[in-house]
Image (cartoon, rainbow, N blue to C red; front, side, top):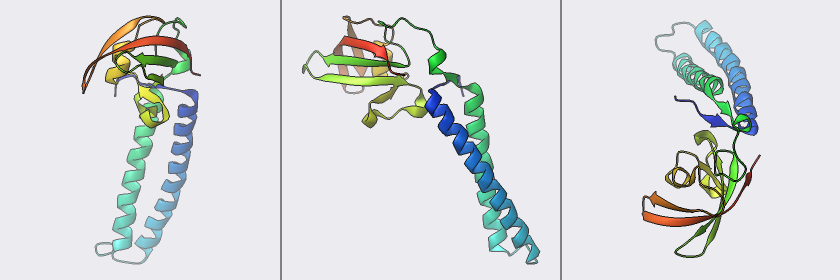
Length: 157
């Protein structure tokens, strides 16, 4: 994983997830011990199922801890408040339709376009990054090229 970006709230959510997974790991370890006590484990479905679930939980713990270790807090990214950057809320106007759109630029992990949060690695974000309020940005989207005017930028956090 390359360096990612995460909000403080996203970081706290990931920490909570790790704690919950560690608790689940304890429970599964107990289940494995109990299943082992029932005798021959070669044909013990409870044992094998618990081992598989434990392996998945451990994989998820490792993945979450790796993300936490490599992620940079968005709040620590310094940028000009008039420039589109990660951690900014951006109001755009579609030049073709006149529609106004508002998005917060976040890291991939917290991206949720339906909630107005888009990844800085998305085509739209890539097309507007570095632009200033009042500028136009020609953006190549999967549906074709579009032009957006940057109406407003403000820190989202």
